[in-house]
Image (cartoon, rainbow, N blue to C red):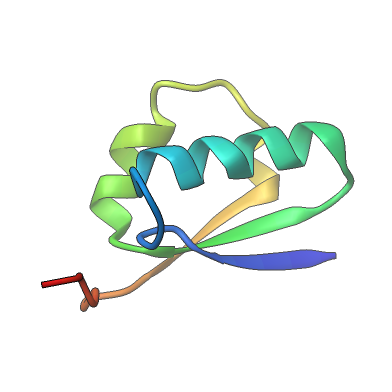
Length: 67
């Protein structure tokens, strides 16, 4: 099963949302599609060991931020 995740949304994103995705793939047989700024997500992911076939990134050029 693939789960899409708005990696740029929520408190302390994208770090905490990305860490949550990494925990999710450890605990269940899913693939997580992180949607967000690819460059930022790649910087975070480089610090972790994980099954790279189970995390995908869809680049989002624009991100809506709270004012």
